[in-house]
Length: 270
Ligand SMILES: Nc1ncnc2c1ncn2[C@@H]1O[C@H](COP(=O)(O)OP(=O)(O)OP(=O)(O)O)[C@@H](O)[C@H]1O
Ligand SMILES: Cc1ncc(COP(=O)(O)O)c(N)n1
Picture 1 (cartoon, rainbow, N blue to C red):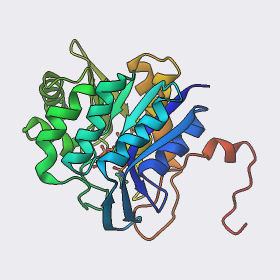
Picture 2 (cartoon, rainbow, N blue to C red):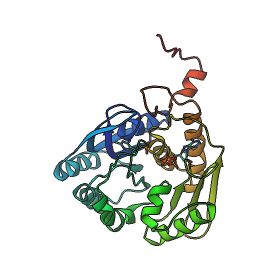
Picture 3 (spheres, rainbow, N blue to C red):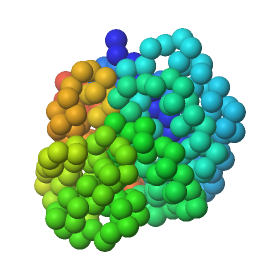
Picture 4 (tube, rainbow, N blue to C red):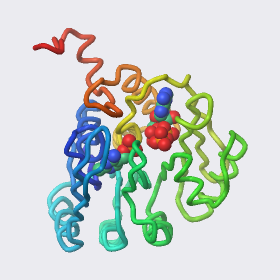
């Protein structure tokens, strides 16, 4: 069985972060592992508080995985401060794992900040170079590239600028801001486009986490980058299409739709 590690924050309400990543790994038939970087008291509506795990403990969790288990892919999510970023980057340098997908999480869906604004330089200089794929959404891509993104042409330009910063591939996600859910991949040579119709729903908590974890799973399973993204795009689209009306805010994605289709009884009142 392929083994995939998530290095990210914990969302106690289960829709995003480590919890979304592990559900996505299971749905892809890969063995999921987790290194918790921050514990976030959050739900579908708000972030109440964030407690970072100490850098030493982040490093020890990574050591515990790597001294024992071969890792086929890694998804890196929320890294809230410089010390967290430096601890993770140090271990990426030491273990040199393959297939690293980095989702540069800056804000939750409800707009709450998940990354200290002063840490962006560290994210770009210390963490970004380890990315086989970086997956910013439009606000994140604007911050990283320092340009305003209003259309497909801007997405292409920003992708090139971000690629030049040292990641091997960049995928800018236009789910919310562009009319269709268009994502643009740049691999240093050409642009690839992944486009679906935009689904009209408020239930998009955890979409970025789910998408990046699906891509990491597909890379672990041996797919090329464009194929891994194409398949993950189908997965996230279905997960949003059948998203769950759980909580009072932005409900979570649905990882189990295929199981439901195949006869699992999940009626609300059971
Ligand atoms: N409403 C939607 N309908 C269809 N696809 C969506 C929708 N929202 C997001 N997606 C897709 O889900 C994937 C993950 O997107 P993600 O949530 O990380 O970023 P985003 O939606 O582009 O930005 P934001 O997080 O600010 O909403 C991308 O492929 C994106 O295009
Ligand atoms: C711990 C944690 N990590 C990431 C996100 C972003 O979630 P989204 O996938 O909706 O951008 C979140 N809300 N909480």
